[in-house]
Image (cartoon, rainbow, N blue to C red; front, side, top):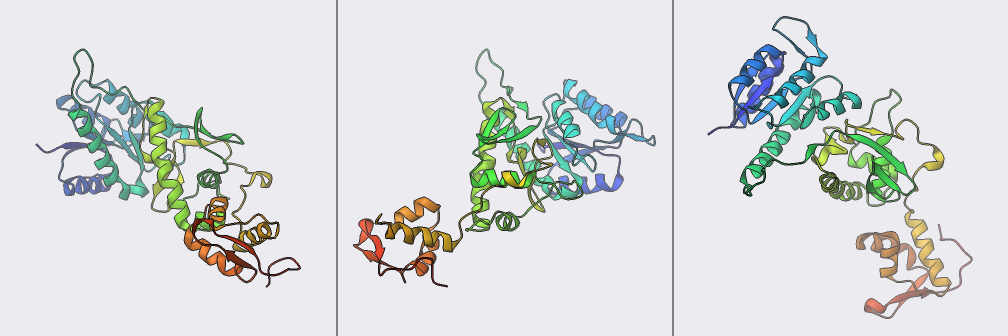
Length: 344
């Protein structure tokens, strides 16, 4: 049997776009253009998914009101047919209003999509459907309910402290790590007060990361998965976009997250930049001159760099140092006395 989606939106063009997308995914759909029409449909059947506009009229032809979508969401969560049906709020408004979005999550929304990011909708729908199927496959244990005890993640405040980065009281990361620096960068706003979406390349350039956009991807990807695990431990259901969301413009701080330090980040608290190749080379040479027998392994551990970066840096080291020994026990020593500094 085909899954069926209820589309609730008063804009005829938006409804048509959503209907086409749902149909192309192989699902059936019903559509409603106001609260009254949606309520009538909800009383007749249960749905596998509901797409809900935030601003709706109570009846067709009447002025729209921002609270109608919220009130309808409350009604859905009290309706016997659809109290556990996933709801994705799809709206053109309040994309930057973390308070309004948090309120929607508190009242039972599972996800939030801003209409300019409508391209992300199919990914969210498939994620919701997969989760529902996983719940349905779980065996029922005698005397227990198969309903998940996890609550939808309502959002929270991101706090940046010397001892770590926290989402309310949940510790997410160390401030000094690459992901800590990325989070600090995403907390900053543009001159117009808008949050920024930044590509991996932009983040790497702003943070002066030696390994470029690869370092950003390697930091963000596991962090997004860690967020899900930590929120589940705290009793919340959330997806990878809960803190760092991924949109067409790149990565950005999720709309449901309020950043404590997003308005002003002083120069004194700016994250340290990665050492330049020349600085890494100079450190290695100084270690040798001080008789500490630096090695490739020591270099890679010290700077957390790849072997290809080591080989590039080695070209600036070999004019001054020579390798002693072979294999894991090899180290470097000075070729000759130097007056200081690297040759230009």
